[in-house]
Image (cartoon, rainbow, N blue to C red; front, side, top):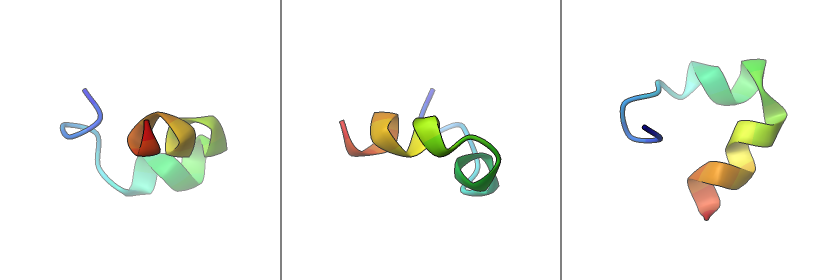
Length: 22
């Protein structure tokens, strides 16, 4: 899902950034 989610989602959900790194 991380790849499907656009970079803008990271700005909306800071927690998502951790998921991208994981």
